[in-house]
Amino acid sequence: MDAETETVVHNGGCHCKSVRWKVLAPSSVVAWDCNCSNCYMRANNHFVVPAENFELLGDSGKFITTYTFGTHTAKHTFCKICGITSFYYPRSNPDGVAVSFRCVDPGTLTHIEIRHFDGKNWERSYNQTGIASWSKVQK
Image (cartoon, rainbow, N blue to C red; front, side, top):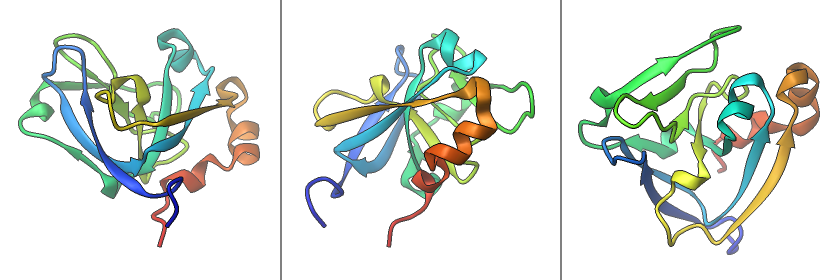
């Protein structure tokens, strides 16, 4: 495993720290800048990990609420106290978790490559970007 793919533990959460989690992911990540109606309004940029690499910590679950729209496949989670979406369950990766890279505590992310996901033309972008592969466990 080289430095680009070696995984580290990233800790993070929401602004008020009521929601905390840890995620196992490379120190260098690909973050998706999506322009769907929800992500665009939130200026959401996220990297995707397999669900098994994400762990909600402590009693964080009691501070989370969820919003869905359209197909109701994506589960947009956010803190009931401060309103920050530090992670969510994306339509593109139902077997994964999308982590807002700006919500990762400082010190463990060494590089972030931003790629565009055209959420306004979801099906085409889904087929062209290969985003679905990002939530698969690498063996």
